[in-house]
Length: 147
Image 1 (tube, rainbow, N blue to C red):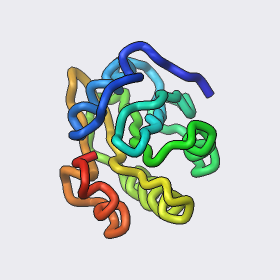
Image 2 (cartoon, rainbow, N blue to C red; image 1 turned 30 degrees about the horizontal axis):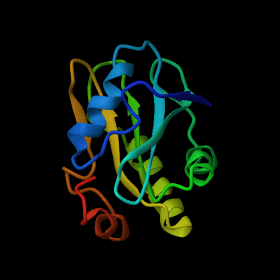
Image 3 (cartoon, rainbow, N blue to C red; image 1 turned 90 degrees about the vertical axis):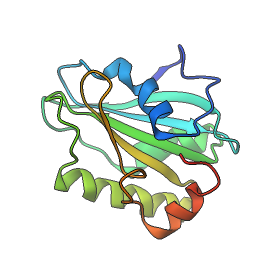
């Protein structure tokens, strides 16, 4: 698992577009990257992690790898995102299944996934929050701040 700092630390995430801006640094990669941003209680970024690097159109993701840095950082919440090297931001059925699994794990751990993002090219992104696709528990957790 790789940690990245640069502009991610010290940024407050209030809207999906702000998280997407942090993830843009990975938008032109040739493989899928799955990234987690750990957040404090006020939604300031503690740290950014490249959790997995996959192949052209797939990466393996497991809640254990996603929530390990969140637990280590004593995070109050996380935002996750992954790239689509094709440039298309529309989530696949598998993306939706992984999102559901991560939300369930987050609810169990009381570390909500505030927004799963899919990042495409030139700043394009898909926010599950903006498209109303969060489960009830996570939507309530995100109500205080948009993401």
